[in-house]
Image 1 (cartoon, one colour):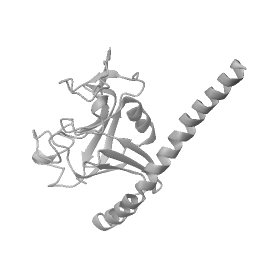
Image 2 (cartoon, rainbow, N blue to C red):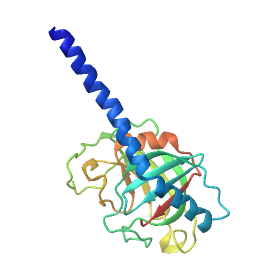
Image 3 (cartoon, rainbow, N blue to C red):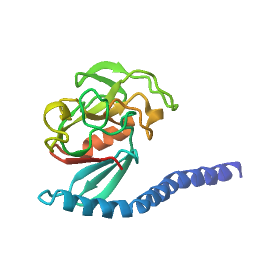
Image 4 (cartoon, one colour):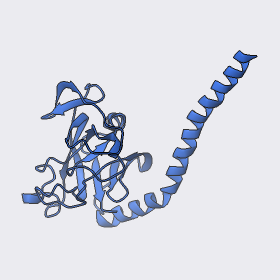
Length: 212
């Protein structure tokens, strides 16, 4: 009797974990259908010569990253952008806006939470802070995705150049702050999320960052 009850209990828990998460994900995607349509319209007007089939959209005020493949929204990740808001000037520690592309991918094979220095694995693992408090160290972990600005005078050239400013998409030791502005300009993800995103995107893919 006890074993039968335990089996039923474990089945219910497993069902809720799997299908409950799927239901929550579907609600989140449904909530963003309007955003998806608006974004496609905006991009077709703003950049009429560009083909936006596979691309990333980062909403600074939303603190979310959307991944599109073949024109369809397939993933939504919570992120952490700059604690100073959106901006493109060097040394502002702000997150740049406008059209970018994926310039490079670094950290393939690095273990989860591995610390990256100069885009290479240091051999150390970061202690992850899961509470919503800063550790006062900008530790880059697990994967680095470099981006390059494509709009001269906005995010390309001179003091506005996103690549020269070393604006990355990367993992962080401050996972508890994901969903809140907390970075020094980069776009931070949870370590498991950045590993997944790293494998899903390709070099040259467009990255659209908007202050919305």
